[in-house]
Image (cartoon, rainbow, N blue to C red; front, side, top):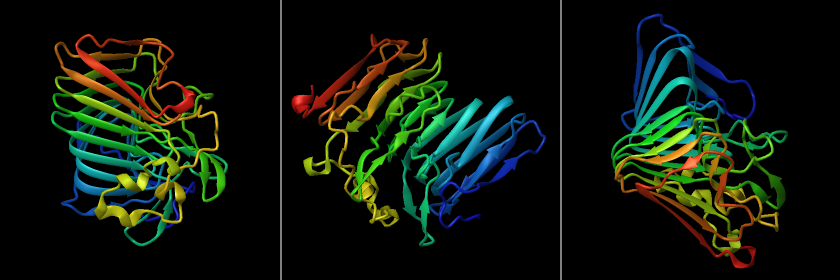
Length: 336
């Protein structure tokens, strides 16, 4: 397996699936082991039909295309992830006729750096001095969170779920998103880590759920739950750092020299106007909808001072007749 010992914004290597058959199928069953990909990714061919299934594995990757880059116009790609942990830059990228489904428990951490299992420190693409664009967990067209599945998505300074097409939470699916803001001090230096955003160049705020295109839609199935948490406190006020969320068995990947990983940002923006946003609806016809009698829940939590909105609706419709949407803003202080 290709292995880039410093990651960063250098060249990437990739494997392209180009076998001209009706349907190509690739299955990766990690059986509890890991793949340290560095700047390597799997790419699907634009015109061919490909199914990729990834099971029971921990993935490490430093490329901003994620572990799989799928772009299809005349062909299609189906991706399945079951019981997967990911540590690195972006987890997945897709565009066009690409459908992604998660089952079991999937944890995705979009980081600045990580200590790989080979003992080397990897810097994730998109974090170079001249860019500093925090990567998304998923920048995808269509994604389904399967029945009874759990998806936990965390970002260092980027958007968790950047959606250009449709998302569906099936029955009892539980999706938890933790976008982190990127303006503040790290290791005593002022840092501006803007969230990558291809649609609204002036926005650049880390966001939990971003409906970016005109017809982007998220559908809440029966008894499904979407939780989005935005932490707006300084470490001195009890802010949880990204390292606090990483499972105990994987604590060794933390770059302990990085205060942002271990303590969190000390915000340099005293107006608190750049705190992470829970939901942004940019598309003119974007939608949040609930299945009939779904009893589904969307819970948005903000803890700390903030001047910007928890929800940013530029266009679209949120129809909550058959479910609930709850917003809890705590410890606003004098900023409300």
